[in-house]
Length: 524
Image (cartoon, rainbow, N blue to C red; front, side, top):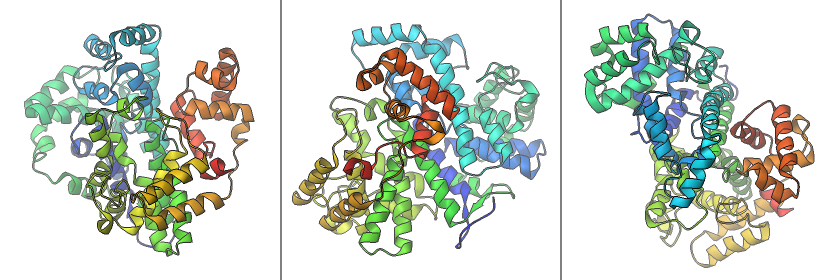
């Protein structure tokens, strides 16, 4: 990737590795599971003498293989109650096995009353398995889309797009088999599953898993290499400083970014993280624009505004570690659920702290939910310990959250949100200077175009906005006073125009084209 913009070169590997820590949490795995699978895949690649270009594809495929799996966590939680518990089951059973299907069925509607579980189970039997298949296929396509936005080369994109294909052709979407599956995808998948088996049961458990699935899920030739070179592949994994080892292991053709490219990569990651819930679509990019304008109003210098804008883009990464059963819950949260929410800024900091480039962003982001009177989280800091940057980010995040819908309330109007923020100042929780700057920025930002991309009509944009927020065709029909059939027709036309076939990709289109209401729209 060629650079643009002055300044030091930034390694893309650090950002992707940090994102992988959130993917770990989203699968109920300990942090560094993905990093360890990357090391296993690279060690196997060395044993079969892959060149630098092929090893680069292995490296980034192993890091990105599951990065799209949170994009429909809203739907996963709708069917199964806890999206993280569902995904954790991936490593317990063979893919497409009766045992895997039975385990998933046991989760249907979990956490809800028996009547609700029965109703959801009945709905699932009518088409749920097909929807889940489409979701899994969509995960790989979205991961490939992120690879494209990050500027990764074609071999990486192709391998990531095929990362759920299997040797026997029974993977997802089931279009490739045997040698037609890119080598990087075959290596990444073998490494992913054997990492879990090795961590839980040692070398013998990893080899037993690999042999049992050879010729089915896994390439039998690669399994033979793994069995023959087990000590070299698994040796030292438990004692290695995994982050440093993975960053150092990036192949010679690794990707470095200029300042502008780094901003674009952060924005791409932020957009993908915000896909986790229909209530947070485009949230990070909106907060980033707000704090940038507010910082300019306060006279912040170019470097300080850049740091603050970047911190805003990453401030929600920790949401990946909290179930959508909590984020999308329409009723009040229980004590345990509130504690999980309070972990979100802490998880963000933990994801970023090992990178010298990203750690300063995490230091700001971790404080964005702290409050001057000590009532915030995760550390209960009081005014002297909360930085000016974090105060501004906290005010911008609070304002943007208020003008967005949440599962327990409709979006506030701009005047209502402003009144809420001023009340927080009077109560001693938010900083007066920061709130004034954010409100001034929200009232003076230039309105963005909200119609027309891909030939969408104004009505189709209305439908897309509701679809992005997780509404069903029936709910869209009720909101827009049209028939459910008309709503479904609009959705089909939208998908055809923007070239996709699932809600998650449509959400991403809406975010990237500025079709979701933002501060200037609410103030209009």
